[in-house]
Image 1 (cartoon, one colour):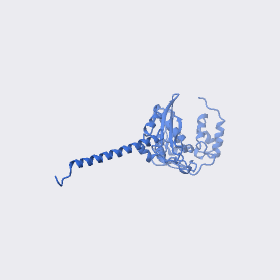
Image 2 (cartoon, helix red, strand yellow):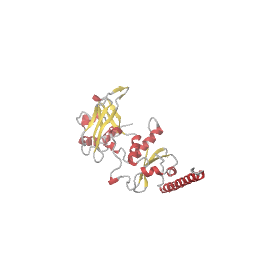
Image 3 (tube, helix red, strand yellow):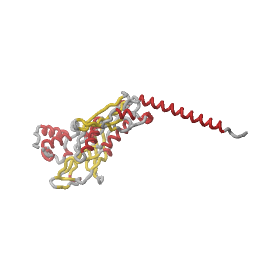
Image 4 (cartoon, one colour):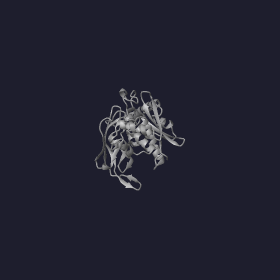
Length: 312
């Protein structure tokens, strides 16, 4: 009828639009497939899977579209722009404190980080698509390999290390430790090895006897931390669970006294020889480890190195 649209013409128009849309989608699909073939082996989903099916754990399995917007840019490289280290130092809230030694006079603390911090910094620095990890068992030991995509070289760069089993969960502890050690090889948390000898005297710590040993219910955390341009710890403040300051380091330690983590080497020698910290303090006429200067540190360390290892 005149004035009414022809049904056949309308259907033909709709069919033409559908066919045109299907052709566009087909062209887009061909373009994506070509981009996937050009992607470096190991980044795309199938590439990452083929590169190490046995015991491999990758952080992501990204699509090509996601990679185009999130992968490190060509030319950035692992070191980042201007040749500066890409991995930042740890923040105070990322560092945890663990009691190392304890007696009736006080306790010493060690600084450490957990594997979640490593994952977060890797994501932040290289994007979730710019790094991956794999694990393999060699001679009964679990190794972890952390690889980072270097856009400048157009290849994955790998660093590997072996884990040590924990006392509670052997397999989980090995997996976590091997990952953290591999990350340390990339520079994550390496600044913790410049930490001073952290001594908390009994006057500010709740130390209680328990059988033939001493324990503390106190929990400690890093309130603030500062670094030198060489990424060495220059200032540090530690508080207890009540927010009270129990330790503070101000300014750069004396030159030469920060070797092997300020005085961590001294503590290892004390454990090897069986000499007590009290004996060292008495010999040099000081009251607490916090008063040990660089000169005293060197003299004490040299003397301990000449001392025989205590019998097992």
